[in-house]
Structures are given as C-alpha cells and as structure tokens.
Image (cartoon, rainbow, N blue to C red; front, side):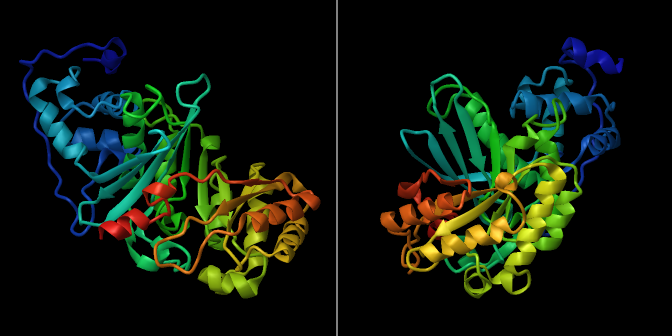
Amino acid sequence: MSEKIYDHEKVVPDDAPALPLVMQAPRRGKPPEHWSDLDADGRRERIRAAGLPAFRASQLSRHWYERLDDDPSGWTDLPAAVRAAVADQFFPTLLTPVRTLGCDDGTTVKSLWRLHDGALVESVLMRYGAGRPGSRSTICISSQAGCGMACPFCATGQGGLQRNMSTAEIVEQVVAGARALARGEVTGGPGRINNVVFMGMGEPMANYRSVIAAIRTLVAPAPDGLGIGARGITLSTVGLVPRIQQLTEEGLPITLAVSLHAPDDELRDTLVPINTRHKVDEVVDAAWEYARVTKRRVSIEYALIKDINDQAWRADELARVLKRRGDWGWVHVNLIPLNPTPGSKWTASRPEDEREFVRRLEAHGVPVTVRDTRGREIDGACGQLAASEA
C-alpha cells in the first residue's frame, strides 16, 4: 500500500490480518499518553512502534481532529481487527463528564470534568449569534487543576494548585467542545469553534510547555490539528514576566491577555500576590514588548471589585501606566464585572462606579470595553463549579 491510500478514502476489508500493537503503560502518577500529547512526527513514530505503517498516523488524526469522530467502529480505512486496539492505545479517556450546566437559552454550556486521578477542571462553551449568519463560538479552557497564584478574589486560587494538566488534557477540552458543536448539541445547530481562551482554571504560563504544545495542535491545519486560527487564541496570565518574554519569541501570533487588576503595586501585591516578584511596571513592559514584536494588541484584563480597585483615580492611574509605553495602538483594556463566589467579601462594582471607571479611561483615549458576563446562574466564576462539587 502506498502512503496515498488515504487520499482516496480506500476502505480496508474487515478480514484484513490484524497487526501487532505495542501497548505502553500509563506513566505513574500522570495521565496516560494520548494522541494529542504528540506532534506529527511523534505520532508517526508511535504508529511505527505499534507495528503499523506510518501513513496510519494521518488517517487517525483526520478522524480525531477533522471529523471529530470518536467511534473507532467507523474508522473503516483501518483494518477492523486493529481499530479497537488503536483506540485503546492512542485515545484513552482523559476527561470524564461530571456535570453540564446551561444558560442563556442553551448558548452557554459549562462542563465539569474529572481527570484520571480524580482532579476536577472546568470549561465553558459560549455561542454568539446562534442560528444567524456569522455566528461564532468561543471556548474557555483550563490549563491546571486548581491554581497556585492565590489571588484572593478567585475561587480557583483559593483552592490551591493540585497539578498541571497534560497537553492532551488541555487539547481534549477543545475537541470535546468542537464535537458538541459539530453534532448540533448546542443551541443554534451545527457549528465550529472560532476562538479559544485560556482563562479557565489555572495560570497557563505556569504550565508553559504543555500549554504551548497544546496551542500548536489547536492551530495545526488538518489533519494534524484542529485548524483554529492563531489570532483566535487568547493566552491569559497574571504576569509571569520570564514566560511572557519566552512567548514573545515563539512565533505564535496569538493574543496575550494580562490580568492586571490594579495599576499600583501596593494594591496589586494584595490582589495578585505574584506582583511581589514581578511589579506592575515590569509586567507592563513585558506586555508592551510582546505587542511590539508580534504586532498583536495586548488585552489588559481588569476585574472591577467593589470599593477595592474601582475608584476613579485608579482609572486615571491605569491610563498613565499604559500611556508611558507609547500610543494606544498596542493595548486594549477589558473590564470584567466580578463574578462573586458564595461567602466571599469580594463582589462586583456598583453600576455607577463601573460607568465612571469607563468614562475616565475613555477621557484619556484608552480603548476600553466591558466584558459581556455570562453564566452567573450556573456557578459562572472560574473554579466555582469544581469547588461546589468537591
């Protein structure tokens, strides 16, 4: 058989001889290795090690990423005798659904997943303009089980860090969302994912290697990945400066989002404890350099918290901090009404304070929007659903 067999969708007879598969045991304490943990070369190596010709790698990738088909019985271009073994070896279950909650007439779907070791993570699929031309879908995904950044207003941060997620565990959240859309399981009929935001549980930059590998699979064209445009991917960080600098050199034209939440070190030391290591000016300098090198506008994320960081003078100070790096073409401020968590003293700003904060930024010429808040009625705050289940 030539390597062009797949180009013609040739169906392998069911009575074709079975080929030996070399099974690999899961790494102790880690998720079992999955197809999505490997790059294209690694997949071909694993296929050859399993006693199969290398061209099978492209066939499997096309089923998984392009067709979003997780039923090996339908992989008819593989010999029937090896389909189940191939699925068991290369596509172990990484995410087990625990709870799924919907709101906004079914266009927002929050999923709670259990990982192989019992850890809980969340993803949120949001559809905009469902049923209308030009509708778009965004999925917010997790990169860690828990978070070690200890931001006091964040439900995930208060739970602490359990562990980093593997590359495949990150990718498979997107695959699951893409599959649900393709099958018409989300209000609005069949669709596809346009945007991926790393704003779920965890600090993505603290799991840098797995996150970058996951992004490369998300943007890889078919059949090696999901073919999502790099400009549709947003990577959020509380400000791990060395990792921002490393990302600047990756050659990935994704959007960087910096969770600043305060323009002054005194307050930010409390709200974002990593600020005791990387101060506001250092973080903003790194973000500005990212924008300069990549030509991608940086998003400054700012959760508005009642009587904590929503004073009008702080809007003025935020404008001054950002303006020192150049004109406004490099940055956009995204104000976030805080999703409160039960029992927390932290809550969203009063509407009049939010409006004044926006007015002050606009008066300085700062590009600013207020994020559309979804999911309040379904434990919308990041980590809240996992905390309630635990």
